[in-house]
Length: 137
Image (cartoon, rainbow, N blue to C red; front, side):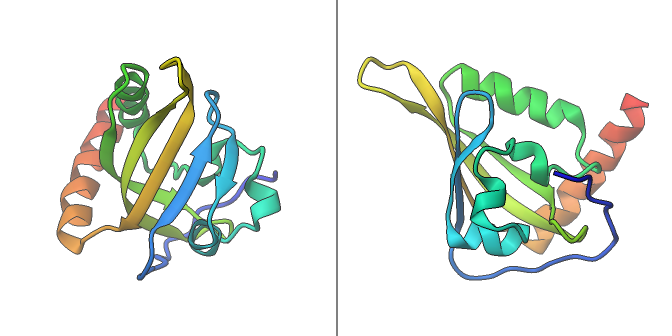
């Protein structure tokens, strides 16, 4: 995949939830129609690609460090994420990610369910993320 250049244009989505599933390395194994719609990618572009294909550069790496440590401990992770669409615009998602376990309670992957984030949550998190990015530099 080629690099996407972010642009300051928000994509708003409503309605059903976006669902994606990954293997243990974060490579996509499933994406529903809503996920394809809001990300701007076709399903065949997503399957096999790492989920960070939609990672916006405005997101601090510490958010993802915390997310991965939570998931690897077997717990669900919830948060507000700014995501990057294929066309360079962005969208905010209220996201819940859960580990997927097999019959032996071994991790096999992760499933993400994302709905439109509220303007209140976006505003709060945007300010926090800006401060976190400044402290990372």
